[in-house]
Each structure stands twice: as structure tokens, then as C-alpha cells.
Image (cartoon, rainbow, N blue to C red; front, side):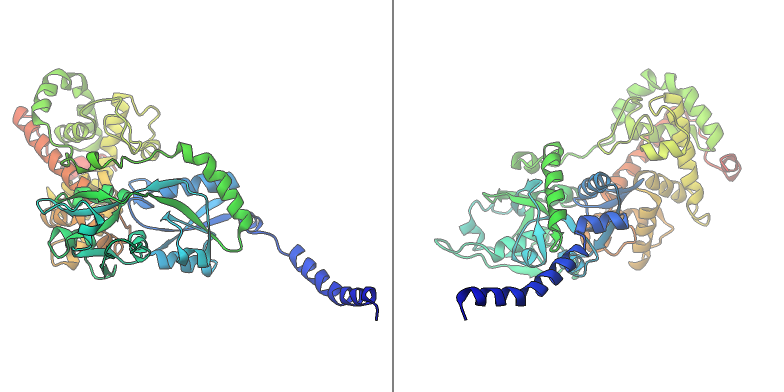
Length: 468
């Protein structure tokens, strides 16, 4: 048989197979088509301050906001698949329960086995963290002589696993499982470890809970943050990359300078001296609105004034980093639900904030007596009622009284610690901030009552009936 005849025979043999493969390809659309047909983008993520969490008005967090914008660009709704750890994220992609994973991730061999890494959309440093007062390490060689602890299933562990050992002693470390109830920062703070390696964004979020810790030094390279796309989604990867390239300049980088993060932590404090000045200079302009708010809500006008002072220092034009507005710092969705048309109008904002606080007070179980019930309502005003309930559940689990504010107050910070907030129904919350906020309002209220001893009208069930 001639060579030409052999080629023809081979072609005749392969032609049916080629046709079948082509037909199979034509019958199946890409990942983007699938997503648009179902009208839903499924994004796997983690619960936490740097990714996604439930705020007073609903979902928040950097990854959630970015994913929401991408879903809107595709014209579909966003559905979150919340996992407990990075292995859960990988499983979600492997099992096709998610189209992509978004959780401050970096590419490594484990991810490349199950996903297509996107272009980087931001970056984050890795810091060595140690306890203040101890000898501060300044080199990797010094770190290698210390007790190093690192969290399992983390970007930090990935760096240690791949650390170069040429020319220096290799770092030995202890891996802390996520289910033991202790994180690496707590181990270092308590002296059970000397140092830990931690992502800069996560340390910035955890600093208020661990003020005894500080940065020793940073690794020379920053890790790139990427989304991980399902392996059959090359068309989705192209769309993601185009989106992230456009979005990257819009994503504000967090403050990651070591000097700024190493300075003593200064949290907002109660400014009673300034309040005394503002009682004379600013309160007369607002008093009629506080009185009217007290009449329609059943709340003590001094309490409303104290809450407003904590929220904005009676600044009608105030806007928080999280988007809250006006004297009572109403979030936009809450303001709309209360019928607010201009959140910067003093009267409108005060009346709406008072009604909202009264609604929260009515939501707290009636068996809880004042002032505990009142302090819990104020805590809900800041963190949301769901997170307050989570704190009360944790209080009961630990043998405390869930109806006593003094016991619940001490558990609020647990909602900022991963081991505990992953067990909570509503996940992460800035409990340390809520705890401080209620403390400040108590101080302001005491000062207001001292200056207006004849005007205090504690909340009563009769007054509360006017809000219903």
C-alpha cells in the first residue's frame, strides 16, 4: 500500500471520532454560559474580617464587595458558599458547588491542582509577630532559633512549607489545628510560642483583640491575592481577569506600614471633657429634637443624646468608614426602612435613630430587666441583633448568665476570634468595638444625668407602648 493510501485509511478511521468530539463540544457551553443560564454566580469564601461577614445591615467584607460587583457585571445574582477553611474552599470547586473561590488566597501547588489562579487583584505582606517586652527578632536566622507557631491551612504555613533552606538554617515550626480553640496570636501572647507568621491584613484586624503583640519584621516579598476559578472555567477566568484588572486601581490598599501598625494602639475613648463643652455650645440647638425623639420613642432624651454623642459627637454631617451617616450614624438601608429622606437632617436623623433603638429594645426578651435590657439594645444598635444573640449563646455555653449584661459584655470580644465566631450563627463581628461603645455611652449618660438631674425619665413599658 502506498503512503498516500495509508494516510487516507488513517483519516477515514479518525474522522468519525473527530466528528463525535466536535458534536460533544457543540452541545456543551462554557462556564460563563452555565452561570448566566442559572442566573447565579456561586462564590466560595470564608467568614472573617478580611473576607466576608454579617454587618448590622447584612453582608459586608472586601471579598464580598468585590464578588458582588463581578456578579452585577455578569447580570446574575451572587450566592455565597461559606466554608470553614481553605480545604473546604478547594472541595467546593472540585465538587462544582462553587464557580470560584474568593478569600484572600495565593496560588500554591494545592490550589493549582484544583483551580485556575486569576491575575492578582491586590497584595499583602507577611509579618513575624512577637510579644511586646520580649527580645525582638530581626532576621530569619534568629527566628529559626525560636518557638514558631503557625495556623493550619494558611498562607503562612504555605510559605514555611516552601521556605528556601540554602545558606541558612531551616525554620522549624508547630502547626496549630484550627479546631483546638487557640489561635497563634493567643499562643504568642500567653508565652506558649515565641513568634508567629501572619498575614498583614489579618493582623491589622486582630490588633485590637491582642494589644500585647507587635510586628518584629516583614518578609521581603508580599504575597499576591488572587481568585481561584473552577478548572473547566477558562472562559470564566478570562472574564474574571478582565474584571480584576479594571478593579485593581479602585481597591484601596490597607495601611500596612510597619511603623503605623507597631505604634501603641489608640482606640477611640470617651471624651467627657469635650462633652461638657458641647453641652453648653451644641446641645441647645439639638435639645428640642432629642425631646421630640423621647416623646415618640419612649426613650430618655438623655439616653438618645448620649448615643448620638458616641456615634457622631453631635456632628450632623458625620460619615463613618462603613457608610453610616448623620448624628445617629444610621446605615443607609436602615435609614430607608425608617423613612429617612435626608440622613444629614438633624431632626430626621435623631427621630429615626431613636425609633430604631426603641425597636431593638422591644426585640430584647422582656424577661431581661433594665438596665441590662437597655445595654443589650444599645449593643444591637452597633453590631446587629443577631450578633448580640450569638454573644448570649456563647455566654450560656460558658456558664454565664445570658440575661446579664455584665456577663454578655465579657463575651463580645469572642466574636472577633476565629475559633469562636466560626461556631456562632452569624459569624464574625467587631465585638471589641461594641463593648467599648456601650461603655462610653454609659459614661456619657451618667454625665448627662449629673448635669440635668431633674430631666431623667427612665424607659417604662407605658412609654414603650407609644413606639408600637
